[in-house]
Length: 371
Image 1 (cartoon, helix red, strand yellow):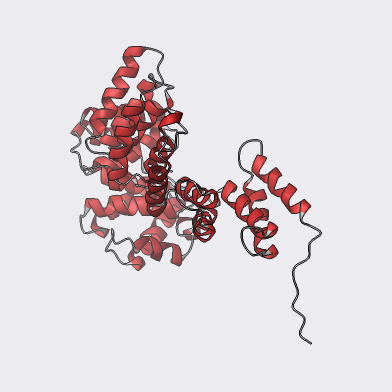
Image 2 (cartoon, rainbow, N blue to C red):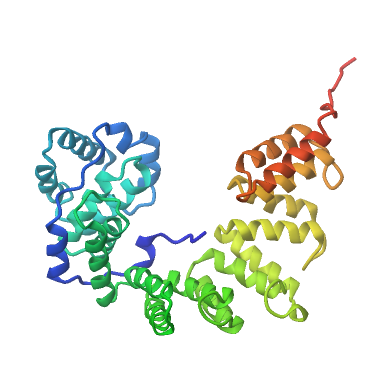
């Protein structure tokens, strides 16, 4: 799970007039015919929560009005006129338009308006918006003739101009090629992107750790993951922890206390895998003295993100009542959610949760009788 958003990691890059012209040639993106204001803004609370990040100083009422006008223009086929009204609505602030596009991309069930805002910001020189619009074309998410080919050209041009997220996308194309030369280009491009984006550092760490593109090099993997972790990629702490635990690389060189420290750092930064592993370390006394209370705290964090194996283990803890006081209602609740989450293509976790539920189904909840 990468915890940094595109807007946090991509630094401003000037885009060429050719890219702006290529984007301007496309019509304003449409939404589905059935789209209404409730599709664009699912509820006021969602909008207010998104605005609480502080990246947009525009009042919520103005954004609601903009969304309603988009819906009306989408219905009456007047989207080009709506597009012309966007710049004045944001007082000519291109960066604000880009952040609004990101906001609507997060809160809207239909992405038409978000893509339309990306188009406006891109036409006026915002490279991040151009990347988002080009990527949507590239993935066939916009109704456009030759959209994927045109989107690829836009993203490649942005990559050539030094846009880090575009470099990452192009690097992945090279890394999926069958030739060594292309893969080497992909690595080199990621190293360029890593100067501006911790996402690239994370990907390089994973490439050297997994060995499915280049020969495994745990020293390189560690170096890139340390860099990514310091720059805010929470999951890099998890991978550093697994390396220190001896789960990867040399088994005789494990450092369990060091691994637990990495898991705790990752847990604090929001890595669900780190939260789960920290919990299991404390539950099993690996890397620190056994501490069931701390174990439960970390496992609850992972379970809140519906991490299947955390739900399963919490459920077992509470229905069995060995390590913690038995709480059948709480335990069964965790197990029922674990069943819903499944856990893997084969549904293994869901199956295990059902076995535990069945084993303890005959036990009734304690009832307090007042005499």
